[in-house]
Image (cartoon, rainbow, N blue to C red; front, side, top):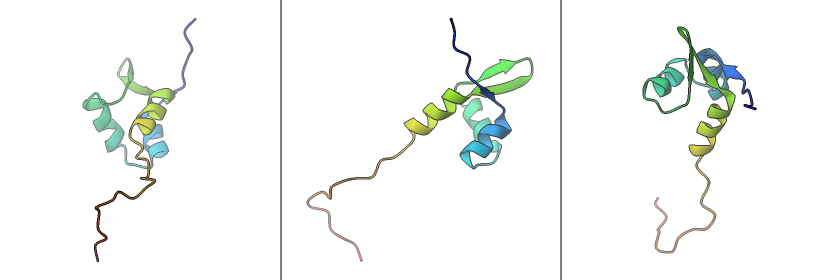
Length: 72
């Protein structure tokens, strides 16, 4: 059985990411996020948004590397 994921509109994804509608539309155009076409409507699975966020999350550096000098 296939699990059904909640499908979000472009507007909902923009609100979730805190961006304008243009950003998720660009992700779709560049094929950088999974999407579903239903007729002329475009929907993005909620799991795809979660994956996108996880893949682009930058973790802080825990230890300072030797040899780096403090500037200013």
